[in-house]
Structure formats: structure tokens, C-alpha cells
Amino acid sequence: MSPLVIRDAVRDDVPAIVAMLADDPLGAAREDLGDPRTYHAAYDRVVADPGQHLVVAEREGTVVGTLQLSVIPGLSRRGATRSVIEGVRVARPERGTGLGTELVTWAVEESRRLGCTLVQLTSDASRTDARRFYERLGFVASHVGFKLQLDD
Image 1 (cartoon, one colour):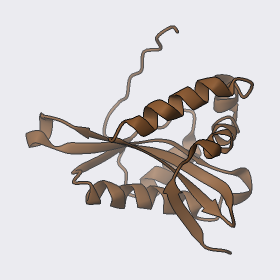
Image 2 (tube, one colour; image 1 turned 180 degrees about the horizontal axis):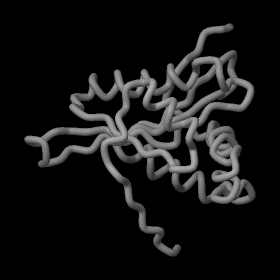
Image 3 (cartoon, one colour; image 1 turned 90 degrees about the vertical axis):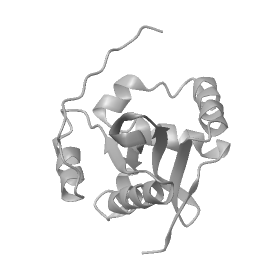
Image 4 (cartoon, helix red, strand yellow; image 1 turned 135 degrees about the vertical axis):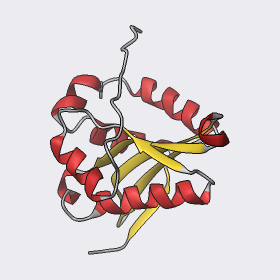
């Protein structure tokens, strides 16, 4: 298999990222592939924030994976900085190849490099395979997460 490159996402990567976000039953219900303006505006907000790291995994010039790493300074845990991994997606043809492991491992190592002492993530309760994947990588389901949907 050809080498994988993990790099910062650029604006031209947005359609590929959104397609991966929409490529499952949960994402298909949440994403709107017909309105690229929304995603381009969101991309602009993400890249303007130095605490946000939107990356893609690329193989032979094709975007095959993505995630967003958010670095959050805080007061708790003696002023610890933590990171949050969000939006981990792997393109369908690449699933099962170890690419997801490479992406999350990159995010953990990048978090260390950025001075984080804790890496956290959430996974929808219905994604049992994803939860097993994160547990295999050493993540512990130590908390119960809550979300409150706000109307647009």
C-alpha cells in the first residue's frame, strides 16, 4: 500500500471531508451535501482558530481520512491542557486497513507535542464498532457524555 500523508486540510479538501462525514446512517441524516457555503464558512472559522487542527489523510493524492483535533487550555486538573478528537472518518475503501489507527495515533502524538495531558473524544452510543476501536487504542469509557441540541 502506498504511503499515507497526514496534513492540514485546505479549502479544496472540504468536499471530500463532508462526503466522508455523510457516509454513514448518522452522518447522512446530519449533513447537507447540497450547501457547500455552510461548510466553507465553517472551514474558515476552524482554520482561523489556532487551537483547531483539521487534518486529512491522503494517499496517492486522494483524501482518504480526516479528523479535527481541538486543543483546550483549562484550570481543572491543575491547569491542564486537553485535546478533543472529533469527526474521525475513514473513506469506505480504506476501512479496515489501519488508517483509523494511524489517524488517531497521530492525534495522540500531536496532543503530546502540543503539551496536552489528556486526550478525550466521544462516540455516538450507537457506534459499537467505533467504541471497540477506541478501547483497543487505550481510550477508557470513563464518563457519561451529554449533549443538548440547540436550534439554528
